[in-house]
Length: 147
Image (cartoon, rainbow, N blue to C red; front, side, top):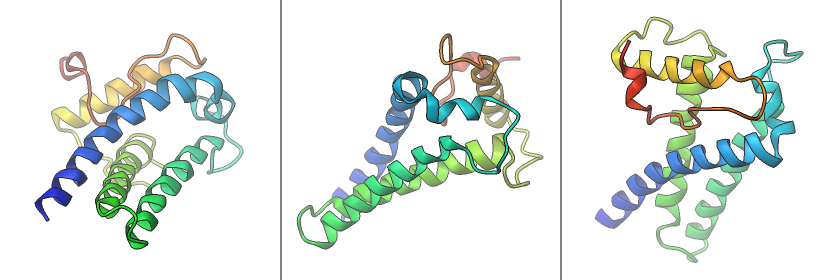
């Protein structure tokens, strides 16, 4: 059981790196066409092509659940839950808290919340695929904690 908890926590932490890596090198790289609408304010729909990345990670998470369920990978459940938990945290912070796709957490005003908002604002300052910064989500560079 302790191994499974540790695998869950490590998977969650690794997902922050995966989010940073895929955001910097994939979303702002060869799959920019899926991510570009996220950097524009004039959307036709509540959904964005960028939402396809959530689907990709959901499929990966479900894949680990299936590996566990079919007795192929004992820690598959812990990995799948770690990916799912990170996706839920990412969705909560990015889509709900920052972009207000649902009108929740509007009054969060602690140091961390302010730093997350500042870092993401700097990321969206660049509307093209080049010259971006702050590609992670939950781990915020220290400079954004200062005013």
